[in-house]
Image 1 (cartoon, rainbow, N blue to C red):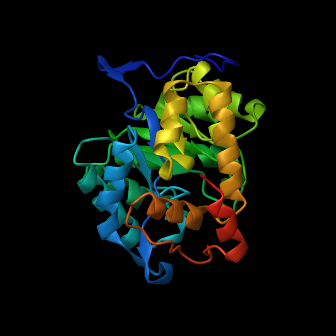
Image 2: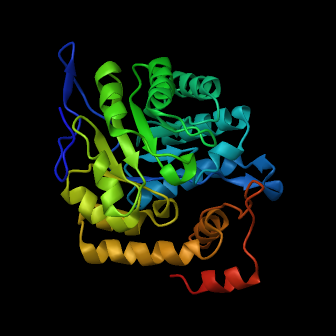
Length: 301
């Protein structure tokens, strides 16, 4: 199999006569993590009603503990607790994928093993930030985590802006060939020229940037893992289900307006306005909105 520039084949490898495919399709919100006490504590009681809201508004899966979920800012024990609550609340209605990315391989492995043990449908991992890993370092880290949670499906979480480096496409093909539970990838790079290099044979690709949903779906992506869908799953689902340039442009503009505030707190405030019992509390060093940002949020519909 080889890298393709426009059209690619979603995961369809066979292992021991079993077709290997990823559980994530369609609209997959990058879920928020409800917090309280100024962001210092989990609000576990809000997870079930929040998940009910996502499902009622078109979510076909959920990614917990990712960037939108403030996962990298939480303690390992907290991340495990959140994962357990999401899996319990889903109760098999939609697949729950768990972001197990951490600064060290050991912590990522521990989180991935726990996710598999409690019944998560998939594990995803971003490249560890701060140290710019070369292709061999990327491979060793990702394969160690994928092997640890085997046979749970594994997704590469590509986000060069947060990791500080891009994944090497040749490394990803090697990983796919060597580790049979590697089934897909969330691609968060933009613009399209940076995105399309990850349209790799044998990977179920999920679109991160909402502005690229239409192009990604037209090129063979199986869905979107969207931060915007954490508060607007219905709007994102409409574009995933009917990918158009105009629809994606509308999501682009909505995302841009939210990014002019403080994204994490803004999404939580929007959810509260939509009837979900979550507070705007975020984990420091993230912060709540100031007066000007609150006024801007009021203009977002």
